Length: 265
Image (tube, rainbow, N blue to C red; front, top):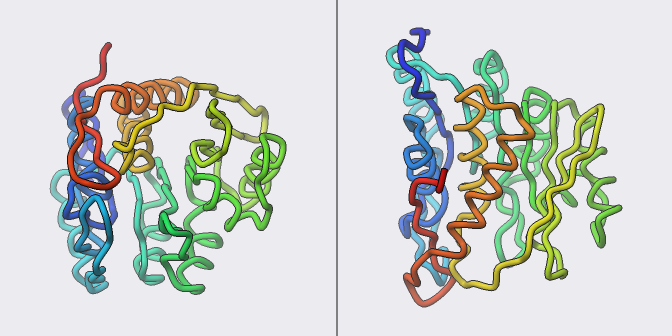
């Protein structure tokens, strides 16, 4: 792989496309570039969606996904790899087996807004048994953490318990995001073998919150690529998403996207 002759972190994101521009590959690219990284992509699925609905999902064939990864890796190279929507167990296995030398940020896109599981049992099993054990950090929200851990999350104690169970799968860190909780305050729990660190913030009431998970994971990936320690990368990324939620315009008639501006730093 080519070495990085620049100070700009090279971030490869492997995820699905969101035609509405709010989440998925589109949010990843905007976030990485806004923070100061160089975004590269391997598209795993193409969706037809807007702010109101996901109409259809078209899975990209395995060989095409792998070719995207291999060609970019041999030419430009990676500093960090971030994953989002992964539907093909063979693609998941490839990432776990062939990209394990890079810091791997896994955003496990598993459950739709309506609560439906988006991937097959085989894909879920492959994520748990092959991909997550290779991860530097996994960033599930509350429904995803419940699915991965088998623990119903009803408060901060069960949120931490679920994170610790996911940690037993093998990642270095688990960030269980608290945005789906009922409280007016959000608690994100960053769990490692040695400590549990809580990041508290006020819940922002807005409909412009589509793509927050993708944005957070991509921000973390970029800061890690800059050599910033994990705790600080997570904190800076949470602050970035909070700022976008406060300042984003209203696009669309449903859950609108954020506007990915450079961070205030």
